[in-house]
Image (cartoon, rainbow, N blue to C red; front, side, top):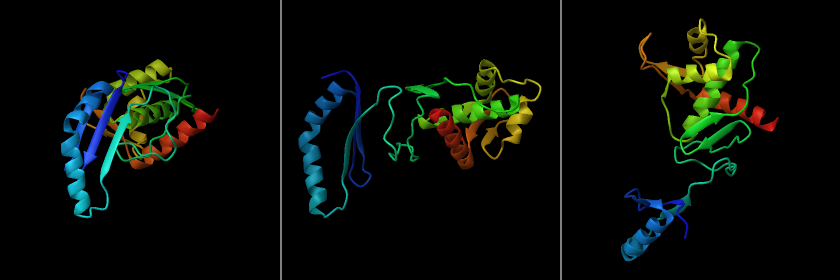
Length: 190
């Protein structure tokens, strides 16, 4: 048995019993609670419960494509763009230059791709400064017009926090998620 991450999620009509950790630890805990779990399942079955959910999932290795149409634990379609984003645990790296005729468009596209990647691993509310630093790293930061570029992308990106505050955060809107996926699909296919 390996030391890879494993998880048991059991929901008896959302009573939920969850164990996560190394594969060995989860297996030991399943064995410890086996009789209780089986008894609870049998009781629910006897009560003619339609669905009893029990899954064991393992964290997929980095850069492995995720089956099309699978849903993430956060409720949106789980997709993978390994030619554009390198995602490992909660760390997201953009590995391709973002397209755009101007630095403003490239900055918005960089923000969309990065925010989508972070959202896909369950992290929302990314620091505004982190986005700005990423744009600088991508070579598309227009420091004088960056704030205006992000503000003009309000259909796709929500910026929360006071003007001039270092505690501002960014997250995607639903149209932003859709736009980011279109962008990432195009870049991933190149």
